[in-house]
Image (cartoon, helix red, strand yellow):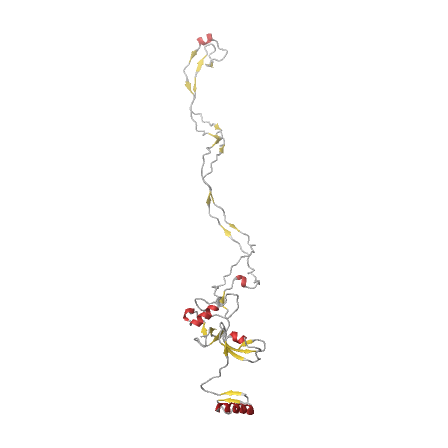
Length: 324
């Protein structure tokens, strides 16, 4: 009976004051309903996603808490249910925190098996296996790699093709006329030089010191007392021969100095004449009009040191939201 009496009374009070205070007698003027407590909270309706979707003609602004799927507070926005601002699994953020916090897990390359059972399930649903990515010294970027992969480098090395297409011009020293003195070393020809020589010596005369004698046989003609050489020439008959008397043979004087002219015939030497010739090539001097160019290779002095292209940056840690 007492409860039945209080209910109409509370309704009348609420209607008259137009404000409701729970846990306070002086609700704030800006609030239609103020719940005040230091040890209790406001509990909104809790339901599954299917139950949420089963609400007939939900009013814009209707608030519920979904307990399954992507759980959280949902607000009906007039045409659909929208999850209130809250982290989604797989969200990535940067922060100066150094450890896991509020469901955010540090991307430090740790084994997924070290996470909580719920976090392991979420990591698996996001496509991670084995280990979490190690985001140390990495930047967030969409570069076409597989999601969550760490790749690339903060440095690059320039090649000649990376240089601008420019011409470096200059003038060489104009005093370029000079001469070169060349003195080749003596060389020997091949010893394989079989050949022959035709030799025709000049006519020569023997020495005039040619003392010698000639033996002469003479006979005496008995008819006229004249000397006639006994050589049996014509005109001498056999009868006369029998009448002849011979003197003794004698020699002429040895003082018979004279010369003989000798013509030595030409001859050909043997063709087996292997030998070598030593040739001394004389030194020569080139023209002093020697203006010319030289191809010069200039060393850059570089050591192909990589260029650090990382910009000025703020050092932070990277986290991924996997829940609790």
